[in-house]
Amino acid sequence: MSARTYEVRTYGCQMNVHDSERLSGLLEHAGYERVGDGAIPDVVVLNTCAVRENADNRLYGNLGHLLPVKQSHPGMQIAVGGCLAQKDGQTIVDRAPWVDVVFGTHNIGSLPVLLERARVEDEAKVELLEALETFPSMLPTRRESAYRAWVSISVGCNNTCTFCIVPSLRGKERDRRPGDILREVRALVDDGVLEITFLGQNVNSYGVEFGDQFAFGKLLRACGDVDGLERVRFTSPHPRDFTDDVIDAMAETHNVMPSLHMPLQSGSDRVLKAMRRSYRAEKYLGIIDRVRAVMPEAAITTDVIVGFPGETDDDFEETLDVVRAARFAGAFTFQYSKRPGTPAADMPNQVPPDAVAERYARLVALVEDIAWTENKNYEGRVVDVLVAEGEGRKDTATKRLSGRALDNRLVHIGACDARPGDVAAARVTYAAPHHLVADEVQSVRRTRGGDAWQARHDAPTSNAVSLGMPAFAPTG
Image (cartoon, rainbow, N blue to C red; front, side, top):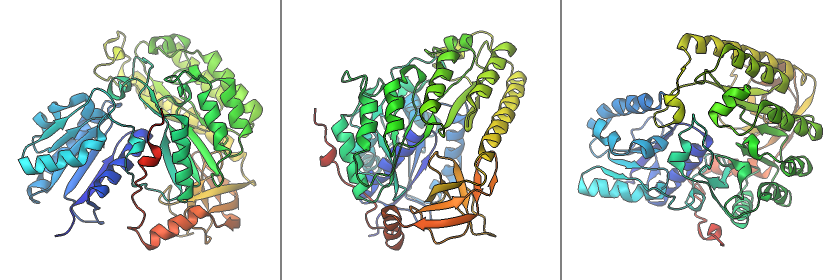
């Protein structure tokens, strides 16, 4: 009898991507196989996000499309997890009774058991926990990349931003012990990983649970002692908790990359107060100044929300002023949308949609203009690009490859024999707002990461699932 097949569809943030790798690992550990291209899976898992207003519509739209597929494939199962599942629970089954399993953010490890119970008992299973069952990083994983990996250092969030529903869905912050994190990092490096990205809803508050306010800076410095680890990144920090010791650790640790994603959300102090963002524009720009003082080449990106309730034209102009001063390399820009259950959803003076759209267009134009100007500074320079698989566009005419520079800029390089996971040095020949083109490849360094990709490419089923739970068990 052939193994049941699965597909995991991911929506939302990097934390969801990390969770989806764990869900895939759990299913493969339980005997499932990833579905082949073009085939219909026996199990579809939707790992959902609840941050955006259209998250609900997107979920139920996808579930509607899956209904006829399921009807024509007896035995097919549909599972819904993630933040929206944690929020809506039984409501999902009530609205879409063809869903077999609903599980929350705190019990992703239960998925294989819930699927089996739903199949044997022929009824939907809904299981949501109010507190974290186990750290996702202690579960089996099927990493999408052979040479890059996510490493969760904390889960949950202690902030109370009025626009955000995440704390109520992910819970209060819980921190992994440093030794457990570093053991995972070393195990990943031994498996061919060159680059790791630390994940947390607020990475630089790491250590709050065990009372060490300098824990995040210490963790970054400790990565400098991991042989074979070439690139370290993290997302996302909160300006409130961004301290000088972290800036110094970034500057002084050779493999911590000169890139920083730090959400701004608004440049208006009045709006920041209404958002319950415990910093002001001056403090935010001060952090950027200190980062650039010790890392002049650092590329800084951000998040900005346009049209928060009560935002005036003057408030928006203040946001534009901060964007001009910060000189961001890029920004994720959002039009504010109500999220039921958040304080902001019930605030007065909701900004009319046409005003929000007009401001949003102006912000995007400014961000792109600044980013393009900053990128033009790279024309003629040689950058080291970690070649990636499936990232960015593929120019079939020129056979370009794509990857990331040290500062995380997307770079399309000229045709060469680099494998995903190898590092190419290439001269930038053209700059666009969202990427660089570096047609002149000067050298290619074959790496352990490239070797790991090659091994996986040659034998796709080998070493797909890492079962290192005992090595990462809590040490107390």
